[in-house]
Image (cartoon, rainbow, N blue to C red):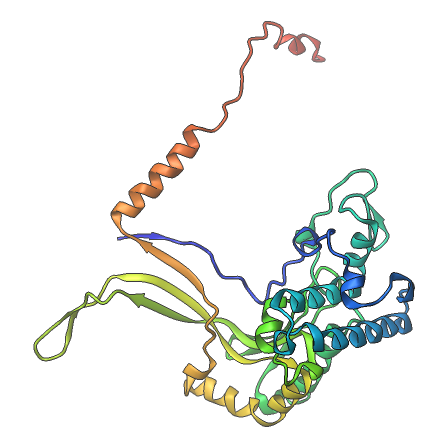
Length: 328
């Protein structure tokens, strides 16, 4: 049996920040939200950020009642207003979008005008003063007030742009994570027409990440006449899923859950009870390959290696002349 790991898990904790995967310059995000660029505040003070959030929130909710599929809109239209709101509220993304290209811009006052590329892997999604920041810290502090009751230990909160919207606690030597997730598809999945007026353009997610291991086998097991499994079926996939306590786009639902249900759910998890209700269907999957599949894969990789361009080596009779110039 051969094992081939294909990482498919799109971690909801990672919140990868890559402007080139977020911004589409062919779209007018101001027009999508029904606002003009001039009406948004230009400053970076707390009052400016609050004013900006209010303008974008009002525009988003107004458009949501038209763009959501339940109101006769489309998935694409709703996803567009979610992304537009994110881009125009994140000062880095907004600056890149407003200038119209990706290269040579300032990141928090550090210029890349010399043509240097910004390493986006070192920049997270966290921005101080945003609704995500306010809501995340509000929930974090409320749970910290109950740390003795819930038997959780505060471990991490975001402080700089290198971080993501993630707040952590330690529970039974395991990490409990609150994450604010900017994912349009998740917002669409969790938002219906009946609650779109109260929904946020991001997901509130509380979980123990990748806590459960599930093996999927084929149905070729061998069973004895007495019903006992003699030989298990071959393993086809190995999956990891989160223990999910809460995922919602509504703040009122999140607060209600944390106040009235979370303590019991956490206790059930610690005692190993009713774990099925917490399992997340969004999984990371690893595929087990049979010998024929592995040979085919090996041949493909070997072919790629053999077809790589080789370096051209040219003879240079004077290549060692630098030795004569070395000081004694």
